[in-house]
Length: 149
Image 1: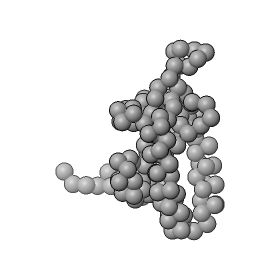
Image 2: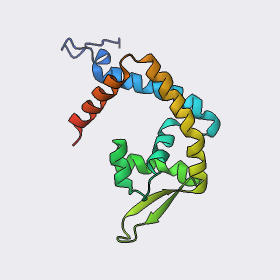
Image 3: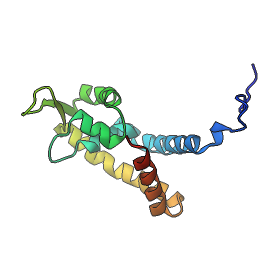
Image 4: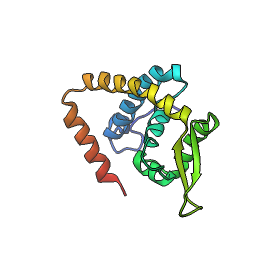
């Protein structure tokens, strides 16, 4: 079987489209940041998840999922290694015991504090590559908002 990018006959090459381009860019940036975070035994997604928990009030899994643009099952799966490392605690909501809230532990907060300068450097490095960074961020935010349910 040979590789034929336009096998569907539409003439459109999805691998060159905007969706594929955004996914490739996200992977490249994530890999660079993952490498920078390796000494902390964290990946980019885990650090971003930890940063979502650095709040005045412990957020629910649903609130974290919404902030990350992910579904609850993805957040739950991403939490497992952080829970095993005791970086995150799961608390029962004081008003509704069925609702789980997430909180950074002391170790989680300390690791987040070490990781934030790393991801800031990675963000600044990436921003230096992207021309018109503010417009790019605004365009991405508009894209995300337009497709949110």
